[in-house]
Length: 249
Image (cartoon, rainbow, N blue to C red; front, side, top):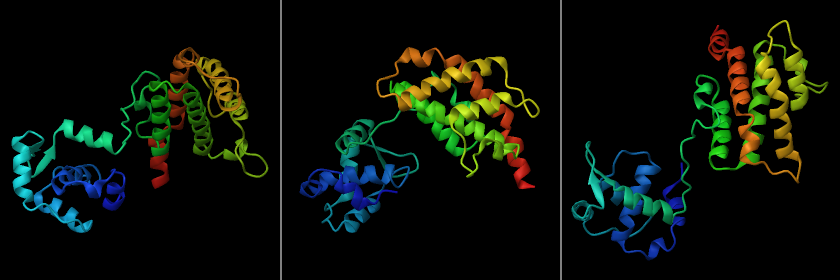
């Protein structure tokens, strides 16, 4: 968690502000970085003390006045919260990056429910790259996601040595896909996934390694349906719920 000292350093000329002007920033810190539902006069006073700044003379009166001015609101469980306008002003002042929740426009993030946290994070990054039109990064994250799922599938069936070289390193993406598609005893990859994988891999490679290639939206849109099928099939084959249960035994 960001410390209070680290927080105020991000605010230009914070020490030159009037003590009354510092109060909303302390309130923002309490809400956003201490994850509190609201803040009180006593908590604001503690922030002044922690930063060795002379406090405002009557913090309780100030909070009450700001509530009347509609810069703050009372919280149902007591204390105060900032209005959205004030919150956004502070967020912009300290340069916080606002990240939206990923859409379902690339593939449903729900596919990765009950899998692994790192898979969910990778999937989220891939979707957000698509949402924010960062298409090369999106393809690279898609390739990473598929590589990870293939590796996990082999680990799930305890045959990971089949996709490792003599030094124990995992094979490159093209070899992983070849091994995945050639396996017939433990699983059979569906026709749609088998058709989609090479194109997904090729575009991921171009974005990662070809300095003259820059992906555009249609490069990804043409693989979206196949990508959804591949991801869902690999997650299904791994069967994380069963895998997790077996590890507990």
